[in-house]
Length: 211
Ligand code: B12
Image (cartoon, rainbow, N blue to C red):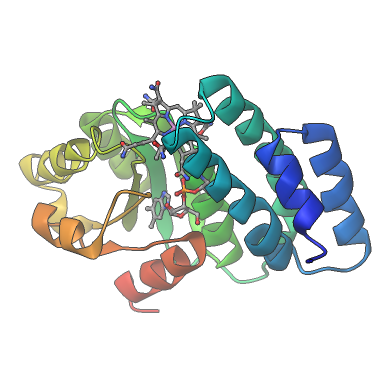
């Protein structure tokens, strides 16, 4: 039995009010935000994905769980972002075209901010040209691409190519992430790095800008 069992269960069953109560209670007890995230919220969502894959859950259940997860994340956000470091670099983060999954992308943004980066959130379903446009506008050092669907992974290649076509490729580092991705895929499409989770994303971003 872990103290986070009930929180995990409430993510799985999509009880957002209870997720809010429990997350707040753990914060009040001075639990570390990252622990609440890694031992309660994220493992709960992993079970939801498994249930969907096995045909036990459908879209409505996934949505309820996603909303419950967001309630918890909103409460953890200020604690994960707390950082007194000056921005080390600017990152534009977005979910690629055709894909609307944004929880992982949001978490990566939160952790990058906590790691001292300035983050510009491009949103979801972002076209390759939009990424290029936003990178120019923000004078970005790094572009973070998120994809959760095997069908939207090719849009990452399109985005890398859009930076090449525009002559911007050597001005930015491109890192990718999302459940179906791998380091091999990053290499294959000519991206500069892959990270499996939000903490590793911060490490990767620092490595890419030489911090
Ligand atoms: C919640 C969810 C939804 C919600 C999304 C709500 C939202 N606002 O995001 C809804 C219900 C809308 C949804 C819709 C669909 N979904 Co869905 N969804 C999920 C689910 C259960 C959880 C995803 C999630 O939020 N995980 C929690 C976060 C924290 O983890 P994460 O996203 O992986 O992010 C972490 C890392 O990957 C990494 N990371 C993420 N992005 C980035 C970016 C960078 C730069 C870096 C470095 C790292 C990084 O760091 C993050 C934090 O640690 C997954 C199953 C799963 N376990 O992945 C299926 C899943 C992704 N969905 C799936 C499918 C099939 C769909 C639909 C096509 C279903 C349908 N038939 O309509 C649609 C597609 C809609 C679209 N066009 O995008 C499949 C994909 C299968 C595949 N291989 O392609 C999955 C894997 C479920 C399954 N097991 O079959 N979904």
